[in-house]
Length: 280
Length: 98
Image (cartoon, rainbow over all chains, first blue to last red; front, side):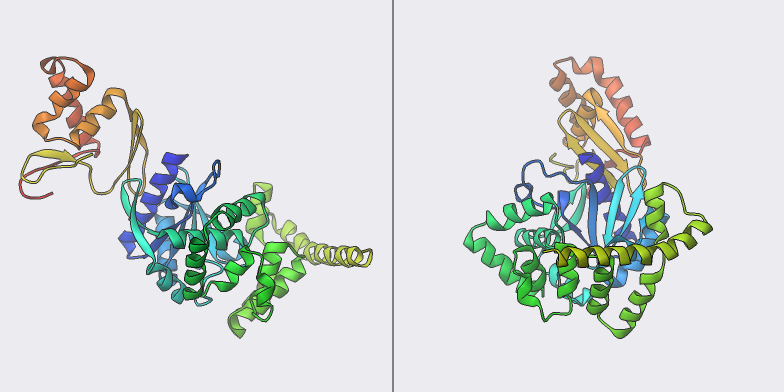
């Protein structure tokens, strides 16, 4: 796995250079080993592409033999990454945006680029975040999750850090517009209640119903047009998700059935949550 | 790996060849398509020697590694180097270019 992932990083970098796409390699094997707690595994290649290069990079990945598994909209509430699979090199998550950084993805990328250095991965020189930025990247990721892995990441990268190291991360977060994301990771999300992205991070880090998630997505949409697109996507059936769960593409009849079943499930979730609140 | 020496005939890893060196094995992959090849034992030793020392010293280096006579293994080592080149795992270098 280790070998395959290193060569996966190298392969993706070669593809990026061929098409003139700028990449930063994130997490996993791009991170200094001591910033990962003992036993923390990694199973894929994560790269952040300069947003205006995302389309050409996606096309180049497919031409080089990667297959799209889940698109941006289906992958997460933040619609930030698409997942590709290669029979030789495994998974790559192509990020067009890193949740928690400056809301303007181009500004966020340019900011992170100022804090990167070269590292050889699989024999190819790649750009990875500098150490302080590595801490921030790990924390921003942990901040929108609830798993034990996320909790341990925060413990290892933040709580076990020195005051000076935490101050460096806070300063970098301020520079990169990542205050909210860092706050979500370090238990201070409620300080950002007035931020339009607050609800989205609250749902991601604390859980929520489907309705709450879609409502949060609408609130966080950067423009009215994005909000319209988000609202339209809310009613579409996620056929990629169904294929991933069932192991086969859904039939037309199944898509139609799912179209009517989703709002019913969503309503059941809301009723269950309302009842749970009432019984407290 | 110290790499090729300017002006001295040698071998080097091709630019678009991915490489991971692990204890006892070398993994190589033409990028970006693969496949991933695994060299072990003497194969790994020969490849690593080729990208580390001048071409003229590879056989001696490998012979010393295994405690055998260079003249005995020379033809096989040279043949394997040619094979590695044919597979795209090595390329010749030398003169003033790197």
